[in-house]
Length: 283
Ligand code: ADP
Image (cartoon, rainbow, N blue to C red; front, side, top):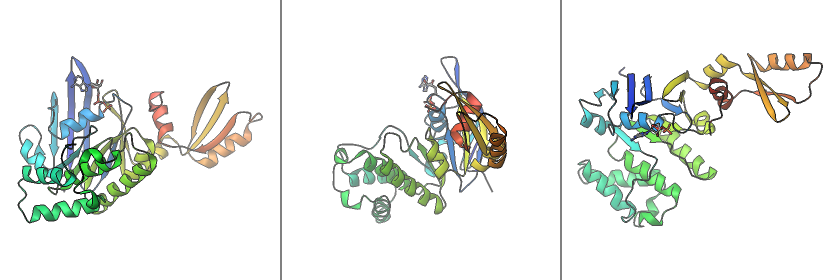
């Protein structure tokens, strides 16, 4: 099977600085892949290269079988893109935004109207179709962006920080929408700096920092690699962390300590792994 997304030794240089540095990565059809990393890690730049909005300085990128530099129109037909900044037109209605996008992609009527109805229904915006976008909440605008990105039936959906700035309830709703799309067979690549988003949604995770992919795998694989049990120890206002292969190992270690003051054990999570890798928190 041909990979949905393949990057080989990709670099992006801005002002002599490598903001994406030798990135190689393959995403299989049907995966939800999460690129996780702090602000400035190079996630958006990666998405922009994958979606033909900017060219790599060096390296090869193939999306849905098309080369992003030589066959950008082939790529564009096969992808849906939701970027961080809200890109829908505020002075048009929900339906007008969808209609405009549908025409841009030359989707003929009556199929265009059928697809508009279908995707507005899917993101629960049917009753808002005649409202101006500027009257919608942040979560609704994001849902409209997703509906619009799906209108031309792409194979791969790119979501750059899809739930940033949204309240927890709205975030959960979007997660259900994203999961549902994946269950229908859509390949999804999303970027985020929210740990829970990755843990809830992603089949595989790539951790980026300073332009480099520093770790990749499923969450169980990463936890197995770094250790599933964690001992936290507070000394003054500092916390130290120690990984153990299993929770039982962590428990045994704790029981053997003559002085357990300030110590506790718990299961490790992605945040712990990120801190272990970089010495920093994600935010
Ligand atoms: P992330 O999405 O992980 O927060 P970005 O890809 O947005 O990271 O940015 C990575 C780095 O590239 C940052 O230091 C940012 O300032 C820089 N950068 C992004 N776009 C440009 C640009 N058009 N010109 C110059 N520098 C840029």
